[in-house]
Length: 330
Image (tube, rainbow, N blue to C red; front, side, top):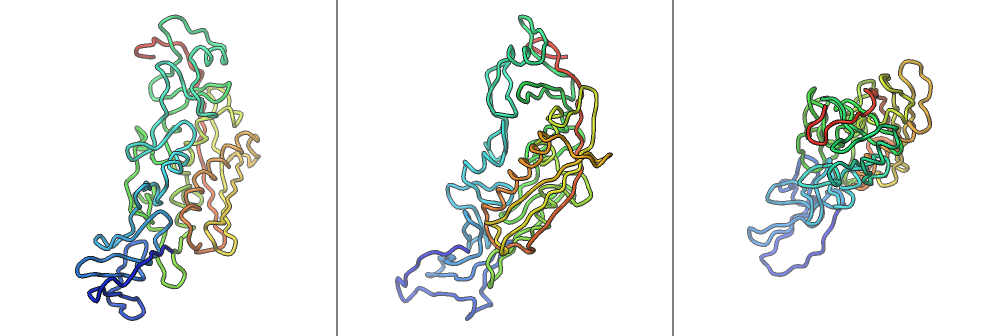
């Protein structure tokens, strides 16, 4: 719950308390104002259940991000936290997650976030690249460098955290107000945070998990799966092979506090039920933790002490990158 200091500046100042005047309670889709202070026609909310980084806008009757914070995935994040949300190899810019930039011809190592020269990538995978050439993949695929390995993977496995796969391309999800986020399965904004006069901000952790990771028993979201499905070697999947992995994301909230929440992901191959290689398991767990970090930053009370969802993600290793003309491609 956010609070602000105030003083009785003049007799024209009126203090509106929820307990004394419930008819003037200012509500918003996700949060509430509990103490509204007005001087003439100018009002401000002194106490609200807005999440950290947000304040209640009495003109728009809703919580909005404060100056210096960015609206990302239903939360108000600092620029540093927004960059972290986008994950390795991306940063937050112009309202969304965008790839980091390297000099022409170089590639981003998705395991470190650093730029790697085309010559180094070619040497690592044993492919000779001549003058006027670079490594590339066929249309509909993208070259992904992951440490000493590189692979061509379908574009559907490369979506950013704030994107969905449309069937043809990765596209930015719809923008939602603070306390709500886009649910790809429902194709609409869903409210996961509610203001309560007694307990402050209450978060529907089941709704949040479904929107971020995917509905229980269904396919994982592009933003979640895309963080690790683009790394087939981490799952031991060789060129031309593919597999579905099944990830169970488990969240718990000690004493019901979101800020103390912890998350863990357990991943197996969907067909056999056998555990994926340790490196693949670590990639899925890291993706789950990265997304979960935005929830923890918002604070509030959890609607349940635990919540989980189990989703499936396709991991396809389309092939090995090949030399292509530096201008154009395959």
